Amino acid sequence: MLTRTLGRTDIEATVVGFGGIPIQGLSSADAGTVLLRAVERGVNFFDTARGYTDSEEKIGRALAPHRDRIYLASKAMSRTAEAMRGELETSLRLLRADMIDLYQCHAVGSMEVLDTVLAPGGALEALEEAREAGKIRWIGVTGHSRPVLLRAVETGRFDTVQLPFNPIETEWSEDVLPAAAAGDVGTIGMKPVAGGALRSVAASLRFILTGGIDVAIPGMDDVRQVDENCAVADGC
Image (cartoon, rainbow, N blue to C red; front, side):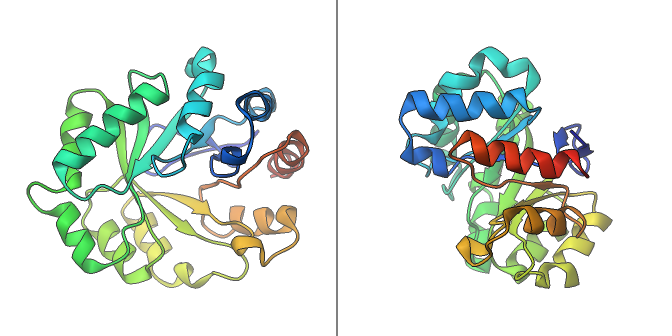
């Protein structure tokens, strides 16, 4: 499968990654089947979050034996350094990992929240400390607000940005994506079917992967979806 480097990082991610939301609804055994199928098909980028109930735990259980073949990305909504330190330790434990490749400040939705994250004692301080300690390798930010993510990218303190991008939500091409490219910030596209508004996942993935996004992370909860999404990536 085609891979792309996520901005300034050394993460060579497959253009179709694995979004970890839907496996919350599966049993541990069924989630493992889907996750292992993704690995078999060559997917190497797995995104989850502290807020996705047991997603981290399921990913950790299924993929720990394959750690040398994959990149792990997770995220937390903590806004202070103290809280973020605790969330990161939980992620490391549940993912059964000594190090997480990419850890993101999750759902930063306002300038006030961004200011808190960036300030001394904010969440970013904890992640920068964790990077120095070797607990994480790269730092990202996620959200749905163009002005907020544009400012986050322009600070130069984030290595990746994750945003909703699909044939409906293309406005990111006006400012955030060009700023990310200029700053060598990796781009991760979430919500490829706009929350169900689009019917063809394949068509949407093709659009995303030619529209300035490095990696798309569709959610998958059965092996058929894995095969269909990987078929799109194989054709890129």
